[in-house]
Length: 166
Ligand SMILES: CC(C)(COP(=O)(O)OP(=O)(O)OC[C@H]1O[C@@H](n2cnc3c(N)ncnc32)[C@H](O)[C@@H]1OP(=O)(O)O)[C@@H](O)C(=O)NCCC(=O)NCCS
Image 1 (cartoon, rainbow, N blue to C red):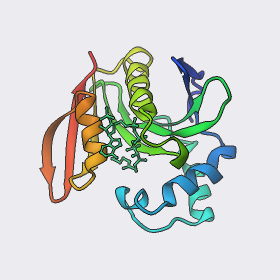
Image 2: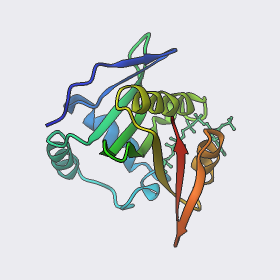
Image 3: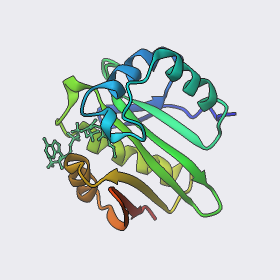
Image 4: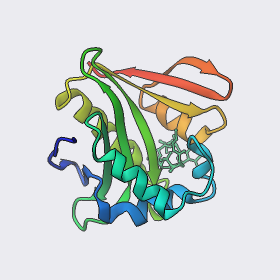
């Protein structure tokens, strides 16, 4: 079962755990053309599949999805996640990053991923985080490079990037 972490406010952004009421928003963001192709499956997900995923997600203790919102008016900006949390290795994967179309390209996801890494370090006590990105996803790769991630491996069209957060 998931621990109920308190919302984290960093600057003008708030990261709070995903709730059932967010699912219509996250499904719409994730199914957009140009977004869904960046995920494990590029298929358009149906509502029942999304709810089924959420039902399994709430039972997992090592998987946390956060809604990024504007701390002043609670507008939903996007989502970020951390999963495969390995307390012994002090390491986890981060990803499932999606921005709501109206907030794209404003530097808010860069800030949100920075806040997620602060949470990973200070609250979870991790020492490094890694992520997977398609080699064709120039926008995301540029964002991760700017955040200090370095490529550690490359298999077919997937690149693994890692960053120390010690
Ligand atoms: C990846 C994603 C979450 C980033 O959100 P965003 O709102 O574009 O992010 P930001 O505005 O914070 O962008 C910060 C950096 O992203 C890069 N970026 C943003 N827009 C870009 C564009 N049009 N072209 C190239 N790089 C771009 C830049 O490095 C930018 O920093 P800079 O402006 O200092 O150069 C968003 O593009 C998205 O939802 N993409 C589809 C899903 C996806 O690819 N998820 C990641 C899977 S690994």
